[in-house]
Image 1 (cartoon, rainbow, N blue to C red):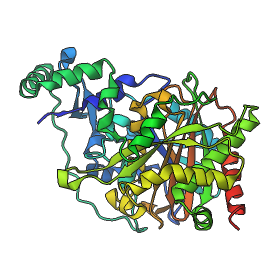
Image 2 (spheres, one colour):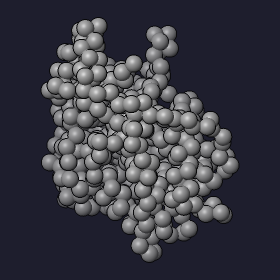
Image 3 (cartoon, rainbow, N blue to C red):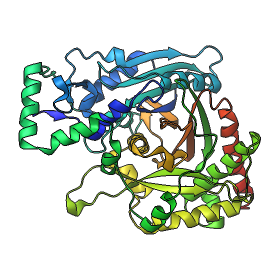
Length: 463
């Protein structure tokens, strides 16, 4: 049976340009095990686990004449050494050097003639550490049949778990005649396919956005909010082809302390922290910040599938929140964010941290990808930036015996938006990945410092 891309996934391919690469990524920092960890070890690990994610050995093949959407086909010449790559930092292997490398790697689009993913082993990081950088195209992550490869290479024990032996043999790629015949059959049995394909080809992604994102919860509030175009901010610019990347490591206990003192949720504290950071960053740029100044964030949240209706897999809904950057008090910013989010939380749709972790073992990479997909199909005039916050497990994970110390998500930039912020909580930490346009955000490190300062301000107000 032909495995055809959905119109929405086709749109992610058609929307991709050199200034808007459509892949999501992550940076995992690992501690070297006693017996070491090298490129060959990573290749063996991925070779053993790749059968758990069949899509990673498939590529996109177009139908002649664009009679139907492209199809997924096995890559008969699949070469794992092409996708798993090796890099090294010059001495002393600082975090700044790692961030520079991440920015350069994330700026490059993926090769359309091969499976749409890459993984880099980065050696030479100071402190006896290594890093693993992942890139996966949006079209690969549909929330049901696909998960991120980094999800399946991690184990809860230092000793890797056993997986079934891989006896994969690629199916022969269909020729032009078979592709056209399959398209004709699909069009005959599903007449709306032609209409869907035409819409995707024209780039009309708005009509398909609902397949990824539902604006459920607080409908009236959302309607009133979206009736107003997002405010003009320095974040909304014409993008270049290059990127900068920032990382911030914080402690989960700090967010819990603030929540305990002032109420709300950990996610509220995160958004209040981001609000304070954006306020400070705008002031460092000499921007005019009034008491009424806001920055509108799109906040993707994982929601429970409706099992009664036969829905499976992961779903993401989008909340739009006007972050109160004009408010001078850290505590008042938290209260205002909590009020804005309360309607969404009371809807009962959001998945709790424990349930989210159980979705796929290590769900954050997949959920970040789904959130980024949501942002990509939304009208960019509705919001100024994306903030994805995905809870992960509060215990250590391992890759072939190497303990993962931290995990920083890389959320791609939507057209016209110079920065996106992703967070993953893991093993007592909360890790921010800040992806930014290189020309528009030369001061991305100022923004990451502002994140640390904003959290410290909230913690100080909670003692």
